[in-house]
Amino acid sequence: MSEILVNKLTGTSTAGSILVTGEGNSTTTNLQQGLAKVWVNINQDGTQAVRGSNNVSSIADEGTGATQTNLTSATADANYALAGTVGDEGGNSGCWHTTGFNQNSYNTSNTTSSFHQQTYYATTSVADTGFVYCTLHGDLA
Image (tube, rainbow, N blue to C red; front, side, top):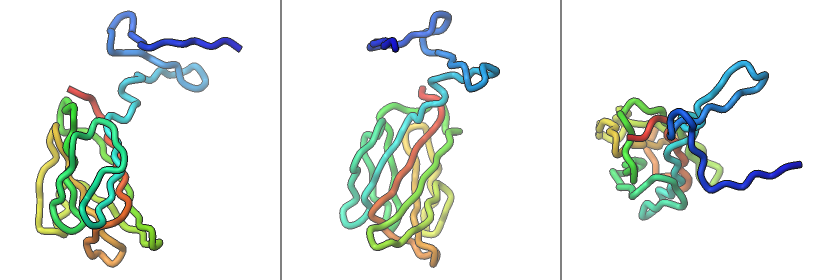
């Protein structure tokens, strides 16, 4: 088996665009567009803290179960896709929502430099939770 070692991949026609042939050799996918541009693992219990992340500069506690995540590098627009989930050590599972969920009386729009998260348990009560996970897919500016 051969091994290729590189520090940087650059497209030949467009430096920031590399196409990858998919399964069955029938389609191609743009490698950069398929990568998550942000991921974050947050502990909301007590003083909110980031356990690990990529492209996150800071977070802000916006109240019970509410977090603003600030990005290191902005997105091209606010039309990105967010996905998230939450849980807790006690076996409590919850729901995760992004902007517009007004359970905590805040209603702030996502921007190119930040997004907002709201967590709550199945009882529909807002709650800080031990584990908040989120990824962002979209284009960076």
